[in-house]
Length: 204
Length: 329
Image 1: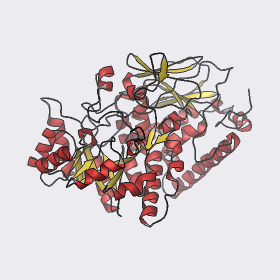
Image 2: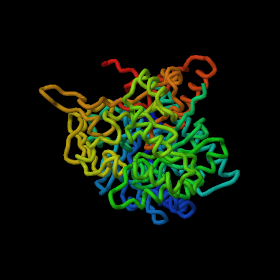
Image 3: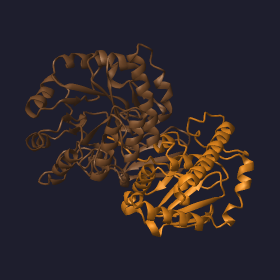
Image 4: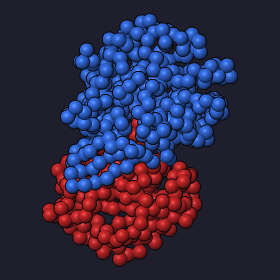
């Protein structure tokens, strides 16, 4: 096994991320999503009947997963161990920077699917609804943190600048252009079965 | 040369992205079965459409509303309501396919500009003139089965504007007449506005890769690092007479950037980008690339290598000029 997974965080950063599950990330994110739902209920209207689905989001370069139930002001986000057997309706996997790119709309979900950069299994209709809702939300870091004005602008610049730096770091490590999605990941022989892959839409 | 660039928007944010990236026109649909991209979480409410049109008009762009599925027998209310809502929202045109709906629009919404959807599959002067003379259609979206030479010949024999797809997904059959999705799932783009509905798509893994199924049909197997395409029957890979292949159509995107100049010379009015189901990252990139190409060619410069720029956004990592260059004839 190599130190660096293509498109993923370099080994030193993965090491730094290891203690993150010990922090109350889930509580903080849950409150952030609930506050967002109170301010912008339209985002969650777009998710429609899938707001009670359980989305397991697995950044391949972290050691833990997120479990999201996007039920508006009752939304929950939990961090769970990668090995934990928790019931979920949808499983989404991929490099952290690409998943963040989907969140802020800078990357196209279908393009990431075509290149096999992201993986999804479970209820495809729920994934499509969540993807489209996030796409339309135009989420900024300040939205999630519930701050606005000049301070919100500062938060956006700081966080987005950090993500951009992370993206450049990972793409440079993987030897690809920052403008392109991360290359397809190689299967890790020590890992369990790879999650399935599905596109975020289909067309006539 | 003054080509209009017509761009897709599945959400209000994609509409804004398209306008800001340089779209002359944006097409979109309502959040129901009246348009051919009826996917979960996609499309516009009447209020969102009104706001979107206001935004587009402020920036000098037009909005075309696709109401391009065929009316369900005995239940036309949703389609009639969509027409009324489009007019109330101040849409610049509606894109229709159903003859009954065209007739209703002509009678009850005479101020609405009518475009003929690609779903109507009108590819001959006789068919196009029928729609023009009977319903007052002003523009036809050309089926993706014509060569550039055929479009040039067609344009001389018709009295309406033409709109030609230049980028995005391809269909293997005459649009509006494909029953593959309906056969497999009971739902089709023609009637319910959705091809390969996501609730019927499933994937499973084994040591050799991923198997994709649509309802009870296995349609594809991907090796672990093999580029993927959409889970439609037409893009599936099947075994027939001992050979394995994409017997309907390869998973490949249309990219006719190199044909912008010939299409303009052929008399085409507008160039259309497919992809209302795609994200705003796709919309912004493709629209900006084509707008630059159109402007460059209008100024007498060469196409700024649009095909290479957009390679990362294509289905299956491949692109084609499609029927515009019919090398098989």
